[in-house]
Image (cartoon, rainbow, N blue to C red; front, top):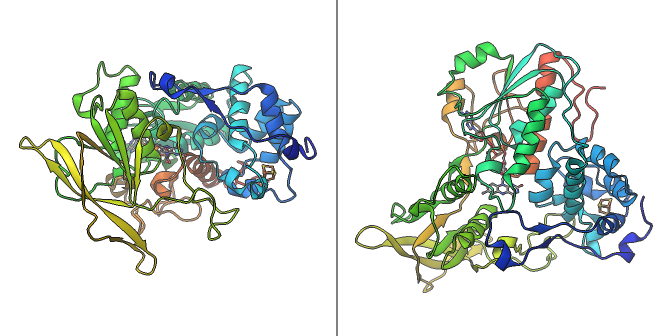
Length: 483
Ligand SMILES: Cc1cc2nc3c(=O)[nH]c(=O)nc-3n(C[C@H](O)[C@H](O)[C@H](O)COP(=O)(O)OP(=O)(O)OC[C@H]3O[C@@H](n4cnc5c(N)ncnc54)[C@H](O)[C@@H]3O)c2cc1C
Ligand code: SF4
C-alpha cells in the first residue's frame, strides 16, 4: 500500500474542464491534465482494502489498488502493465466509463471515492506519450482463422485477445471506419477520434486485418464467411433505434439521436463539407427526449451547433442529490448526474411524457404536447397526472430513447436464435446454437456500456480460443485461464 492514511491527507480532485464559453467553440476534448504530483496524491487516497469492493464493481476486474499503489510510487510503466492485464483499452474507459468501481469504492462510505477513472486515463496517456505502448504480435501463428463482425469495443477487444493467441483475425465492419459507437455515436468532445486511430494502428501492426465497408450478409455472403473461417464472433452491437409511437412522429424536424450524432461525427471528421439542414440545430429551439448518455451527447452537440435553446425531457422523476436509505453503498447510486454537456446549457425537465408532436401546414415540427407522470410502485408503471397538459414550442426534436436490440437479418441468415429480449442467444460460453459462431457485446447483452463490451469481448475470446485449441491460456476476469 502507498501512503498510510493518505485518504485523510488528500481531498479527492476531479478532472477540470476548459470554461464553457471556450469549449463550446470546438468539438475537441476539453479536459485539463492534472499535475503529476496531484495524480500521485490521488492514488495515495487508496486504502488498499482487504476486500477491495472496487474490483467487484468493475466488469473487467481491474486491479485497482495495485495500480494505485504503483502510481503513488511513480512506477507508471508497471502501473500500465497492471492496467493492460485486464483492460485492452483504458483510454476509452478512462474517458467514458460511468465508473462503477468508484461507486463501489470503500472510501465512498465516508468520503468521496478514489478518483480511479482519472488515474486510469492518465496511466494510459502516459503510456502512449512515453511510447511504452507498442505492438505485441504473437510469436507464432496457429493457422486458425477467426472472423469478427463489428468493430466496436467488443469486437476490438476480442480481436486483440485472439490475435495474441496466434490466430489470424479479420475484423469486418460495414461503416467506412473502425470503432462502432465510439466512432459514430460518441461525440469528439468526449472522445477524440485520434484516440481510436492510435489504438487501431497498434492492432493493425500486431497483425489484425481490418476490412471496412463490408456488411456481412450483403457485401460478403454468409456461406463464403463460414467456408473461410474456423470460428466467427458476432459483435454487431444493439442498433435498432427505439421510436416514439405518438401522433406526429413523422413530421420533418423529428429525428433520431443516432442520425444526428453520426451526421455530426462525419462532419467533424471532414467527411461532410457542411451540416445538412435536417441535422443542424443552429438557431433552433431544440427538445431532446431521453435523459441518458445519448441525450446528454445531443445536448452538447446542439449547443456546439449554436442552438437557440435546449430542453431535455426525462420520463423518470428527478433523482435525489445523495444516496437514499433504499440505495445504500456499494450499489450503483441512483443519484442526480450532471454531465459536462448539461453544464453547457440545458433546461432539464423530469417526469414528462410526450403525447403528440404538432406540425405546421408543411408538416414541419412547431411544437409538442406533454403531460406530467408519476411512477406507481404497485402497478410498476408511470401514471399520467390529470390537468398537467402543456404545450412547448420547438423547431427540432431529437429522440434519444435508446435501442431495442440487434438487427434480426444477420442472425436469421446465419440460422442462429434470438432470446426473449430480442438479443442474440448464446450459452454461458458465448456460443450460439452453432458451435463455430460466438457472440459478444451489446448484440448479446443488450444496450450497455463500453466497459461491458470490452469485458464481453475478452470473455468470448477465451471460449473461442478454447473451442479452436481445446484449452486456452487467455486471461478471464479474476482468473488466469486454463493454467
Ligand atoms: C450516443 C452514445 C453515447 C454513449 N456513451 C457512452 C459512454 O459515455 N460510456 C459508455 O460506457 N458507453 C456509452 N455508450 C454505449 C457504448 O457505446 C456501447 O455499449 C458500446 O459501443 C457497445 O460496443 P459493441 O462493440 O457491442 O457494439 P458497437 O459499438 O455498436 O459496434 C458494433 C459494430 O458492428 C457493426 N456491424 C453491425 N452489423 C454488421 C454487419 N452485418 N457487418 C459488418 N459490420 C456490422 C456496426 O457498424 C458497428 O460498427 C454510448 C452509446 C451511444 C449510442
Ligand atoms: S475500494 Fe477504493 S479504497 Fe479500497 S482498494 Fe479499491 S480503490 Fe482503494
